[in-house]
Length: 311
Image 1: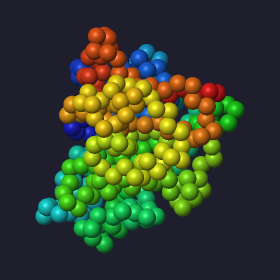
Image 2: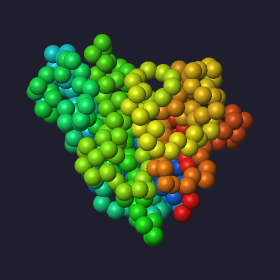
Image 3: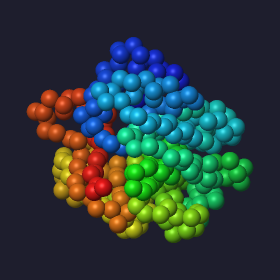
């Protein structure tokens, strides 16, 4: 759902000529979730692409919301220090154009007014692990969020369930300064700072952290300390998936939500507050012989992670 140019997602949803988009729609229909957070979906000002996507589902959602990212927004600075002032790596967050690879929420529950932490400057995060080559001018404009951080209330009818939604940058594709690794870790640290009160009033339970840390807590690249600290404050439903194909360091009984370079990695998570009763958890990752398996492979290298909770 992330394309190489603005407006292409809407165009291709309308033409119905892109196999990977058609596969993604089939996966969403197969999940039939009450609440669904999509990552790596292009954002546009009037949410036209999201509306077109929703209209093509077997059961369209009554409530949808596009979540604006920082991707592709020009910074006016040479953030990657290559001597140029333009390009995806000089944007506030990596992106080919504004709105590239954002997030969207689809819900059968009414969505309240979200609170955004997406404009928080990286330097203003308590305990920020800033890269050593970040200049004062860059620190004055560079937000921490890439795809965004949103606190979103959902109306349960009997109360409110709050989603803490985000998608972090990959902790790779940089140099010895480890800018992406540091940013990835701090994007997860946002929620721990919010929960301990150092970023304002913590959300009242019940709440759920949902999204893409883009970091395996036990395997792969990156700095897992902030993710492990957050997981310790919440429930980990340990959704069952496939064992890492390479017998990797991660627990083979746990979710391997992405297959990349032959390695199963847990990079997508749903972590409920401890007062929530979790009745099921899993990963939509069937055996190769299942008819939906090739559809999943075509849609994305990631696999949908799900949990069910008691009312």
